[in-house]
Image (cartoon, rainbow, N blue to C red; front, top):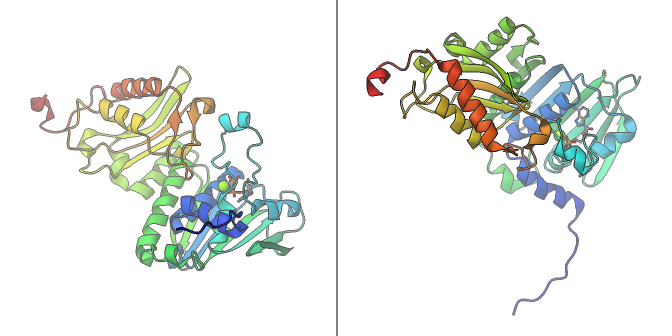
Length: 344
Ligand code: ADP
Ligand code: MG
């Protein structure tokens, strides 16, 4: 017979480590959470330094609003957030974060230091975790925040085993930075790997500058073979670029979709875009696109997935029809893939 064990609350650090299982998969997911925090803090300059693909060091410095000393320890506590305070706010949340879980989760599986100077303050402070204890001490820092994550998964060997080579982890991290760089053209970004600058993206305000950034991130080919999209109707909007049929791909590897500034996978939208291309693209080819959909935040549920890779539209049908109709119009008059006319 199985002997019954008494029920006990889990120790705090273990709770955080379990939560980390949902959002901290690899260095790229750490970078995603930290970058989203910098964006939520209103930063327009972000510097990212990584070593060994992010396994040894991920350091992200921003010039956002910062965190005052009295709240530094709270930032590292589970379910503590400055972004929402009620269910009503959750239902129309516009920030990228809101769960108050990223920092404590990451801190529980790495050596994390959070250093910040709040806007208007003369001093900066630094917080580090030792198990469940948080130590706060003075540190030099300009206005803004730096989060340094060292030795990811050093204390969770099972997770560490899932990390791939430095090169693979770096490739994932770079892709994450690339997605974010396309979400926020107004933010200047630099990325350094092992001390070498790999991406230097100045803020891009003009369309021309945006396209230069896009070309830098996706290659010249896409921008040269894409149509600009800018449609607004019935409280919805879709903007961005749609690749011409002549720039179609054999894989769905150049499809970037953002909903309210958040990079997501969404079947409804993907299907609608596919529809828009149906007369100009062969079935086994994939369109290339970078599209930004904006809807009233109350019309979309972002709390579907801990890492927020997915969203749920309250009225999926409306979004689907809007996209397929207007994007089809953008493609109207465009020459189909060679050989396609005869196939129709
Ligand atoms: P969430 O983003 O869901 O609120 P996090 O654990 O990622 O949860 O962050 C906790 C809190 O710490 C945030 O709500 C925010 O107030 C603060 N914070 C985190 N990163 C930064 C940053 N880079 N700049 C300013 N404040 C930050
Ligand atoms: Mg966050």
